[in-house]
Image (cartoon, rainbow, N blue to C red):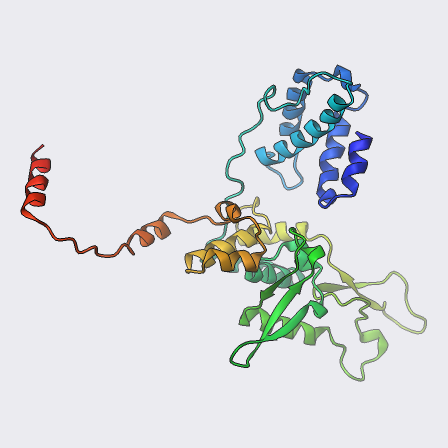
Length: 331
């Protein structure tokens, strides 16, 4: 297990992988690999299903399958080293939960404003950026002012755009995301608010040691000599789960809604508005065209409207076709 852990540390995605490794290590602690049976693997899945989640609710089949993939990879190393003959976590020997189509939760157009109105100020800006750019929450929280630039369009007008570096994208490819007029105006006001007023005393300024776009002021523990109130320092926003849960409760929305679902919400509504898949893949950084099935949730109304676009074929009815229709109706 340590060998597998060390190998994963050198790969992308280890930040989330380590949680799966830790749970596998916790459950099988004290067991030697030769003693692990198919029954132990099945009991491990049962244990995972009963394991409480931080946000509440039941653990999804996708989450359990992630754990099973890690366990299978660990035991596969034991097979390659001839420590065991067969892998007890092999999918042919252990029935795993069905994969399904992934998460399908999105917000309706009239629902998007509810969490925005319920958010505290620093979270409001992050949520607005998530839902108007489709960027992953982790990348939004790490966004810097230097990454927001203007591009010049063919008509000469400027267009503010986010240039995401490769290290902040899942595909490890840099991409650019244009800003909506609403989001651009909000970021301009946010930048202006972060600038200390001219002539203000040092104790009234918010000191910023970073170029982060989204941050909130917090008080330092120590006080400066000769001042009555703590010196304010701008801090990075790392964890917004509690604030997000509070906003969902205040807005009366499903507590199981994830901030990542805002990304799915944007893609779905842009697709329903007529934006083509290639353009959406470029904006959202989807390298695999099959991901559209997961991220786009088309409702029945949209499908019916799509059928209404079938053109009038204007075929010419002949006597033969009319007789055939009467015959079919009589039958």
